[in-house]
Image 1 (spheres, rainbow, N blue to C red):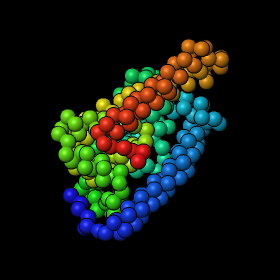
Image 2: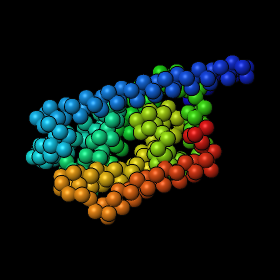
Image 3: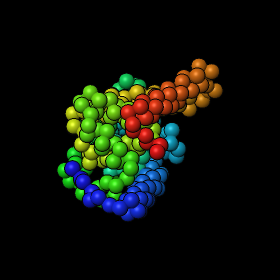
Length: 259
């Protein structure tokens, strides 16, 4: 477990500021890379499908993946896992498209949830056993990272799993970044992986369902009814509510991600 040497108050403040600046700069760079990468991913999908617009590309890719049978599910999941472990583009595009591609919200949710859990496990193992020292060099002195580590280190199994569930439900902690940060913490792997699966499942279902609804509206060519708007609004509201409740519960456990 990483234990920094005691420092004077001034040195500690300067070190924390430097750590926060380094972490923030790295996160910002990651976001820029993801935005550029996502644009490239969409362009590549359209080129592969020979489509002029995104709706046509999704339709062609849906047929392609479904014709592959089980191999199509494996290929789609592999791409999702790669983009969550090596976040060069946003895997969110694949999440909202899964229900459309495989023709079912249930199938899409099961696929994305499985892929996300596997990617969380892979990133955790990489962080804990391969890149631990390098990640600590960037994030080890950050206040949020220290707070998470301390909260997870002193928690029993049910509490640690609850903290992970709440953190995964919070929109303030990006999925891929969180997987690596959890890897350098002292949380048990079993509590982490169960908490990650349970914590991400509601949002995954909501996003997959919203993506399928949006696609049906676009393909129908007809103005959506008020029930569709109500459903989409309820989806956004549910995700927001879950995130707010998670943040409130985390504060009760002395974990404040907004601090």
